[in-house]
Amino acid sequence: MTIWHERWSANQIGFHRAVPNDLLTKHWAAIGAAPDAHVLVPLCGKSLDMHWLVEQGHSVTGVELVETAVQAFFQEMNVKPTIETNGGIARYAFAKNAILQGDLFAIRPSMDPYEAWYDRAALVALPSSMRPDYVGQIHSLCAAGAVGLMITFAYPQDQMQGPPFSLPDDEVQRLFGSRFDVELLDKIDLEDEKQRGLSSLTSSVYKLTRQ
Ligand SMILES: C[S@@+](CC[C@H](N)C(=O)[O-])C[C@H]1O[C@@H](n2cnc3c(N)ncnc32)[C@H](O)[C@@H]1O
Image 1 (cartoon, rainbow, N blue to C red):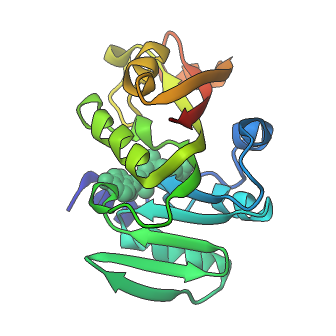
Image 2 (tube, rainbow, N blue to C red):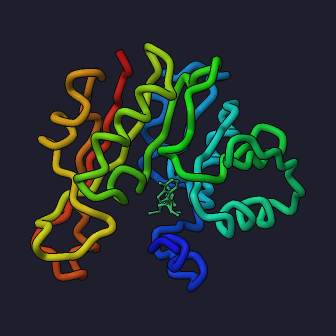
C-alpha cells in the first residue's frame, strides 16, 4: 500500500478541486495544442480538469495509480466505463475520457504517442529523486513537437514536508532543458496559501515543447 492508496482510502485528497484549475483555463490556448490533440494527464486523480480538456475538443487519457480514484472519476460522471486490461494496466474509457489505472512508470510508449500533456500536481507530487524518470516518461510517451502545460509550486522546502514538494524554476530548467523547449508563461505569488506558515509560495506555469 502506497501513501497514495492510504490517502485515497482515507479521503485525504485536499489536492482535488471542485472546479477546473484557473491557470489551466487561462493558459491552455497559449501552448497551441491542436484542437483534436490527444492529451496525456499523468497522475490525474479524479481531476475535473480532464472534463474541461474534453470540452475543448480533445481526447484525454489520464494515468492514475489508485483504483478508487479512477472509479470515483467515472462514478461522478454517472457513466459506466469499458475496462480492458493489458500488461497489468487497466484502461477505463467512456467517450473521449480514458484513464490508465496503474503506475505511470510502467506505461510503455504506444504506436500513437500523445500530442499534448497537462501536469497539475503531478511532478510536484514526486520527490526530486523520481523527477528525472518522470521527465523521461513524458519524453517517451509524447511525440516530437508535443506541447505541455505544467503548473508548479516553489517554497522553502525546509518549512513544509511534501507532497507537494517544492519545484523551483532552476530545477525545471535542469530537468527539461536538454530535451524540451522551456517557456515560463506566468508566475504568481500565492498569498492566501502562506497561512500554511510558509515565508514564500509561488506557482509557475510553463509551456514545454518536446524536441
Ligand atoms: C497530488 S495528486 C494530483 C491529482 C490531480 N493531478 C489533481 O490535480 O487533482 C497526485 C496523484 O497521483 C497519483 N499517483 C502517485 N504516484 C503515481 C504513479 N507512480 N503513477 C500514477 N499515479 C500516481 C496519486 O494517487 C494521486 O491521485
